[in-house]
Length: 210
Image (cartoon, rainbow, N blue to C red; front, side, top):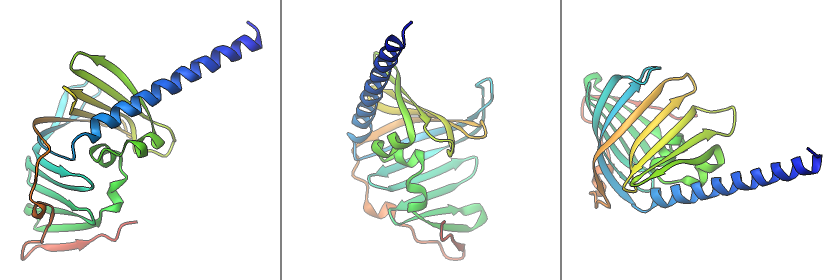
């Protein structure tokens, strides 16, 4: 095979790859940004190497873009995480402890970018591919573009054009599945839900961030 022909083939493959990436980014952006607020119940599992479910937690959350959410874990222990856009408050009732962090510290993490629909920022860090489209089911895979990363792989499952599952594989090989149920779209949550005042008698830890 001539060098010219090899170059032409590689160029064509690169063009196809680039086009597929762009189409996947556009479609993912369309799906993630069409609703400004939503709520759901969640079931979170860690997965073994064989894919069996292990550690389990469950709860509910409400999210309003940009950068406001109220994430409540009911089981196996209670915890509430609230973001007002400026700070993230983590309340552990059993420990009688509240930790406050700058919201900017977490707003650029991959899960936060996904939930906030910031696909342009995601595409700077991940190769985004649509790996399945069949009926009412669409699956996207995000693979990191750099060696400095927290996640080795992220998969997003949409059913009827609504995000229903996130599968996260971190840099240590641990896999986490988050299943969303009882999804409500375009809610009008009370703005006070995203405000948090530490209860009396709890320890307040101020994390200045990095």
